[in-house]
Image 1 (cartoon, rainbow, N blue to C red):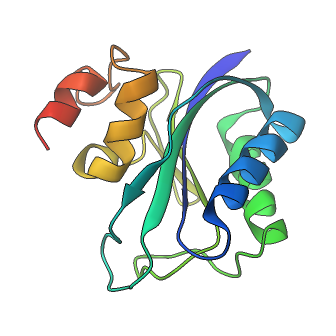
Image 2 (image 1 turned 180 degrees about the vertical axis):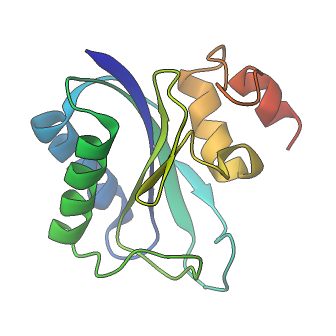
Image 3 (image 1 turned 90 degrees about the vertical axis):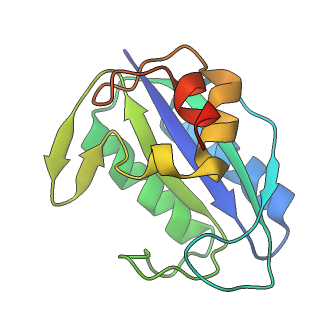
Amino acid sequence: MAIAYLGLGTNVGNKRRNMITAAALLVERVGDILALSGFYETEPWGFESENFFLNAAVKLKTSFSPLEVLQITQQIEKELGRTEKSNGVYHDRIIDIDILLYEDEVLQIPELTLPHPLMHERKFVMDPLAEIAPFVVHPVLKERIIDLKERL
């Protein structure tokens, strides 16, 4: 079993329901949620929108590999109505599920980079993650999540 931290975000539709449904599907398909942060209302990052986001972080215990978790989370996104991934151009979305950390794994392949390459630059990721994992050490930067958050 492995511990993974995921980031959740939504800015269209019934945002609370989107988050709760995504969390329920993660439990059903990926593994047990050991911790779920509060929901944080945040401004859009990297694009203009009048729709604010809800963001959260989850700590999961899973028997799946990082690529399997990625495939499952992408399927959940599609089922909830997400039509496309960002690929560098950001837009409104019904749900976004990102793998932030997977154990101490460092991975860089076309499908997935671990840890998430921009997580430490994003307050909307670090605030909820620091709530549930303040003393987890970023495997590349070798700093605690709480310390990385404090510098934002």
